[in-house]
Amino acid sequence: MDFKSKLEKAITKNNSLLCVGLDPDPAKFKKGQSQFQFNKKIINETANLVCCFKPQIAYFAANGASGVEDLKKTIEYIKKNYPGLPVILDAKRADIGSTSEMYTKEIFDYFGADAVTVNPYMGLDSLEPFFNRKDRGIIILCHTSNPSSADFQELSINGQPLYIKVAQKVVQWNRKYKNLLLVVGATNPDQMKRVRRVASDLIFLVPGIGAQGGDLETTLKNGLTKNGRGLIISASRSIIYARNPRQEAKKLKDEINKHR
Image (cartoon, rainbow, N blue to C red; front, side, top):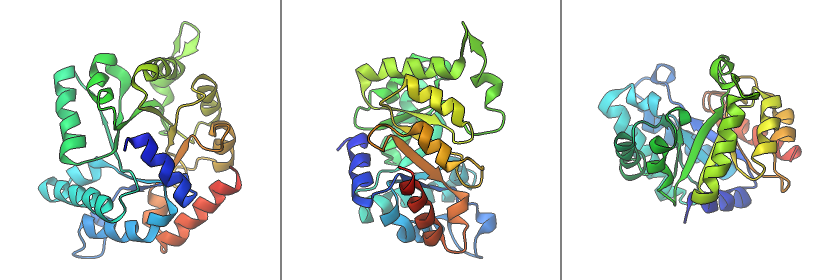
């Protein structure tokens, strides 16, 4: 089953647009707890409340071999115990074509992720090795949630901001590849509205809700497609470090559904 089909089934089954980001910082763990053990607890507590999980590769790679192994074990655990839930590996990859080929093997063949985030800065030849994995989701950075996102993303190109040029190009590419999505941050709701006008049918991965302070109601108003879908609302720290992660995830899931 391809990524988009798997995602749509998970959205329907759990009635959820929520994605829990797995950003495990060992400095915040109980003594002796591994990243995998931390993730396993979060996964078990939230699996029936989400449409997918999104581990961030940097949190694991920073711990060397043990972190890489914990990431692999995390994805394998989800696939074995919750096979209906897709896994997005947040890695923001892309390089010259031959290097991107190696990245696809890392992300999809070694780690077994269902989707990956990629950076469009180097253009089509850096992205095609990902696009050619037709059963996987390729999620392209468009307008991100970080404070300095406007430094480049809002530069004017022939009267249009760069992020709109990116959205237009991805819409064009998706006519051929059909497995593309966009990253559009919740901290910029007006920009999300503009991207939705350009990319009416694409799914957006939406960081920025929770610890980054994005406004949920405005995000949903500006980003949902006509069928009340089209968004993957990602929250990480606000859920995984909460006193009761399940309660926090359910609260956010219910709040999202209230405005759908």
